[in-house]
Length: 140
Image (tube, rainbow, N blue to C red):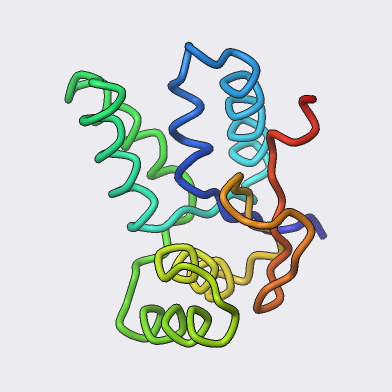
């Protein structure tokens, strides 16, 4: 059985980032692979963060962002609930992880993901049964 994989916001952002073509290609390839395998998982938090960066930093048009949301809705989406927020708070306190990162890990754990793709966390570390993998590390 393939690993279920949680996709952090930076993967979605790099998929749009033509100013860093190596990371853009890696992000697009990862998203395509996870989409085709049906193994990719996102959360409402990731989608909100993506929209915020797409509007403020990338200055993408709203129509483009909506089209991307339509695409990303094809992945499994974890709704952030009070129980997930509590689990994130617990991880923040017990594992010294920033709260919003802990929330991402809690979402991944709730969805039964074995892997969390993110460049924001310590690659190779396992937290709450979720292995952290930087999808951009292999590019160097």
